[in-house]
Image: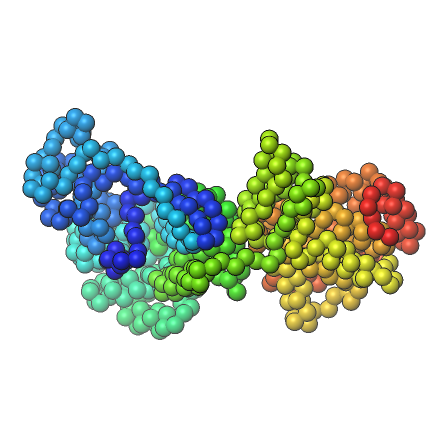
Length: 600
Ligand code: FES
């Protein structure tokens, strides 16, 4: 942090909030609200005299309320810049100045109550999202008594106690009597792997954090009785299994089972009841302190940043990467990268690895001084455009601008366009062409695949990122599925135009499948929501025209779901066999009469 603060080419905006981000890769414009510090940065030497005389005492957030601070304070010992800050909502009054003790004592005259919030705009070429995490608040898990018993703490609070710079200078003491506890218990997975309370994901760090804490306790207090209540210990990673074994060898007792109840005894120690699932027996343990190993949740600000940068969140609320294996630090929006727990729970090593990768990805993008755009982008044919704005409405990246009032043709910003192609099927006037994966290329594939014996084929559209990869996975896994499936790849299921489907049926396909990534996993943010709408629209039209709507299927298949892909194809084959030659012929006639522009 200090290195970053001193670096000549790094500008740190502390006490600041990003309020808006506009633009695109290579040219982002970031609006920042820099909050008033009321202490002049660079002038303040952090002598601390102001803090000594300040009469306002508040819980110190950095020490999670285990110590106190004043209304003028340094947020934490290594804070950059080292200047103090005034929490103006806690100060006794600055307009007019009511107390002024800090102003009187500061001989460098650094305190300035006339400061106000500033708005700053920064131009940047790439953005790294590192919004961090929020520890789970275990209040709702009342069975552990976190809010009822003072000697029940979270793992984060223990971390502050055990830290040499913490409120007790590294001494682990009970909150009630400030004595060293004789016995300490840890409860694992509090707020993790629990869909009802907390989140159903594994928080990744808690097992090893507990193992580390047990070792520290045993080193500092060899006679301390340390117990860990767990479901299973996930000690994956280099050296972790050995660390876990060391903890056991040091005398920590690992008990498989999570406590059902925690009661407080008259001397403020705790009675923990647990079913030991290894022995099948109900046990009670008396402990001086209980530590809840809390899980990690996404930052509450993730939603705001997601909207500003048109990013995508997983159902858990963490940011979704462009590709889990090939682009694990890139966002789907070009020029945006992730570092740390913004993308998912991580330990320090993983966070540093990802942050380094994100920095290099950003440098690689900007280093040449030029940004090259994707070859697969959409393009507007101005004289066909009616400025209706439908394409702009469906673009997940806000890459299309259109002035519907002035009736000027839509414009595609190719730097922002990711090439999903969901705008093209939405245009009713044929005013959008895709560069690559053109309408012509796709309809030609339909024609070629159905040229011979179309009644025996299954026509399937698969998105590049999930369904096509799922089909590939089914192949490499040597799963058997009907050999008469004919796949057409599109970048996203949102690219599948009605006319491709009609063309398929008109050429004699008995059944058509549209497949893509699961909802929430689309690599173009939410483009597959439009796929759902389009397929629903086609189903209605089919019903109206007297074509069985079951013949057009929509299924989501992820890259890891080879088995699911094979199963869907077998179901499609059963459907195909139920379609008669007469039905196919009748469909061709109906479509010829009802759908304009179908190619013969
Ligand atoms: Fe697969 Fe959009 S990328 S559905």
